[in-house]
Image (cartoon, rainbow, N blue to C red):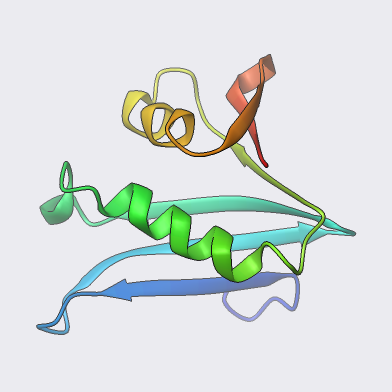
Length: 98
């Protein structure tokens, strides 16, 4: 995915050069799909939401639609996306970023 021309990856770093997490946008036509992860050390500190907000703000102009497909049992990710400006497309907890 790193070398793919259909993906864009952003990495969030702490001041001490520690990697907090990453967000990747994979696109097809005018649509982008988010995949992100936060290092376990930084769980429950608000970095997931911050990373998603930064990524969306950077990519919003480039893509017509941005989606995040989240497993229904992934409670932390579902909570983050529900707190963002999203429309929830019920099947598979597919979130459309508005």
